[in-house]
Length: 160
Picture 1: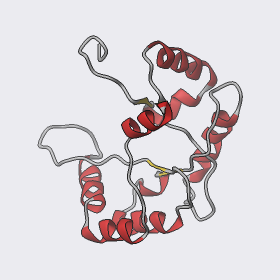
Picture 2: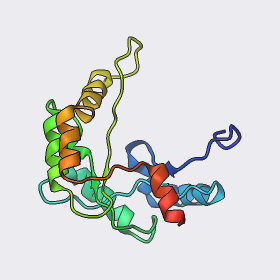
Picture 3: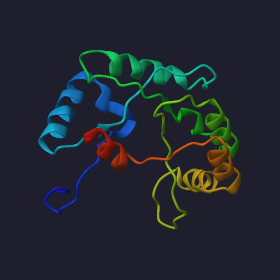
Picture 4: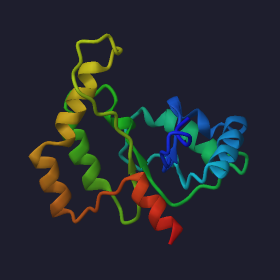
């Protein structure tokens, strides 16, 4: 439907990262080839200092690293740390301090408050948006010389 509407997809991922599981991963890979999608969410093993939620990340990374799923690339994945934390700004700033050279990915779920019943995470997503847009986070990004990219920009850079 996206393609029929003239939209160019720049990446794919899935709810709870199920695209990493071998059978589903093969289907996703085939669809990505058919629609010329250049990027996917990758999962890496947790970096030292990541939270206890990294147990899930360890399990997902096992599949991501296996030849049954898709070839991994040197991209470190961050974001489990943000889930269910009240001080999201502190978590983001701590994550930024730990980034190493390369192309890391920070998974986040920012959103706006809504009166509609859109799920349990309405306020949490708003808090995440506020944290990501906070001046102190922007200052740390600038001071650390971090270049922000979207999947669209990564797809373009991978094509060249």
